[in-house]
Length: 306
Image (cartoon, rainbow, N blue to C red; front, side, top):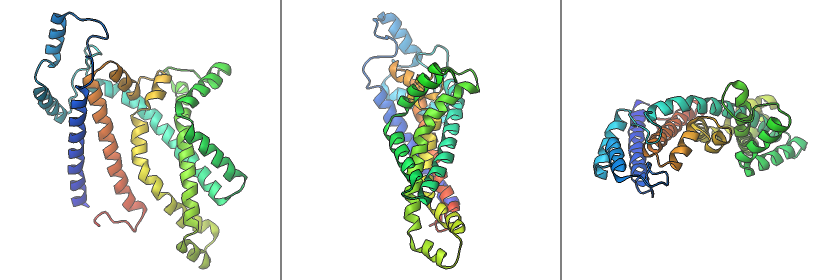
């Protein structure tokens, strides 16, 4: 186990270095600059700004400084938000994205798995067809469309919840639902498909032949083996949702990671783009690593050392 963890940590560091390098050089290939905003800036002012942020130095020197700072956990100053570091902005935005993401993933897993299990146990029944229709709609329609629908009906027409903002728990409900609908549909469809496949396997038939009740077979064999593919995709899913849904946070005016990233791209804020990208990549890689470790505990047939 220790050998495997050390090896994976080395791979994680190499992966982050590759992502940092590619992102750094791609950012500097973008047309435009972070200081003009489409307006002509005096050459003297532009030179002073470039000198302040080190953009007047050769690209390879900037790259070396960037890697050195990243190794210390310092993403530098934002080029657009005056006197604010990227670390502070991540520190401010991530808790909000984390709150929405964890709640959305929780709703998606609880309702999605429940719907999938019930649909599989009632295959070709009314509830099964209901889950199929719900899954198709949930997966096909983008979450920003659901967000707009919820804002219009639940927020504006019926005035049940605030349309946008971040001023308390009531403001979280609509964005959480908008994020959770797609997750519910995905998990329900996947769980139902996996369970039907597992229920037709030989070891389930053997368990039934030994006299185990249907409840025991489903609980001990079917659900446990059906949930493994969901665990596989859970790491990237949680990382993506938790880091921030760009469009949802923009629609609901939530000052989270997604909003900062969209603003950074629109405003050519190189340091903020690099900081948020690396933060997202680190979280994604760590979640995938964590899922691999959990796999060995969920399925006894899998051994990390092997």
